[in-house]
Image (tube, rainbow, N blue to C red; front, side):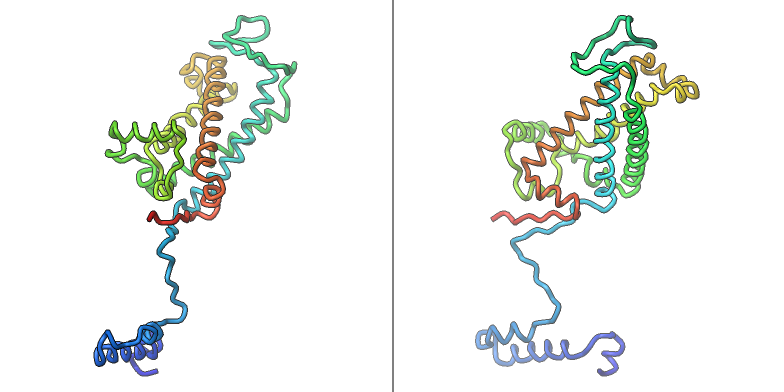
Length: 278
């Protein structure tokens, strides 16, 4: 190892081999130089050449993946505990008060009805709600700081054109499977739906849930007045919960259409592997 190798911290023999290869090529000509000799002279140990037919790109950051799965399990717990609470009283009202014997806005024809709310249902719902809120708040703040929403979810102006929106809607109605290139990003409907859920529907369901709590409304009475009373907040909360469940079912259906195994693997590993279009 000479003084140049000491300065760079690299062995000098690969550079010498490459230089010799180039000089030999120049002296005898490209056509007469054996192709296998050229390949061997340019070989460097540890150097990998990626398959040109495969696209392996980073799709989801670690933050997105962790918050996604925390939100998945907490939302499932909210749905299960919410059903347990609902079965205790299947009548809905509008205004401040409501109860047995009072005129209801509508009744749910459910076969099960309990006289008192299940204790485990309320406890699990309360615990899951705060996990969901804390996780969601962390995701939103981190997404704003890292510009995740602007880079990955905010639709481009070209994508908002009438022709582009019509094409995406038609593809969804025909249940057309997205190409591997299209699967590497979100279309305009997906971006709009995710932004609406994150910044509109989830905040609304959180606020209506807080408006049903006497401890919260005694400290912040304006919260319950915004929705027209505790029973109004409960009714709005119910419809929002149903909307989010429908959104989840559609979300899972689209995942199955695009490839369930590959999509779940991407959300676990963070990398999306697709084969280039011919």
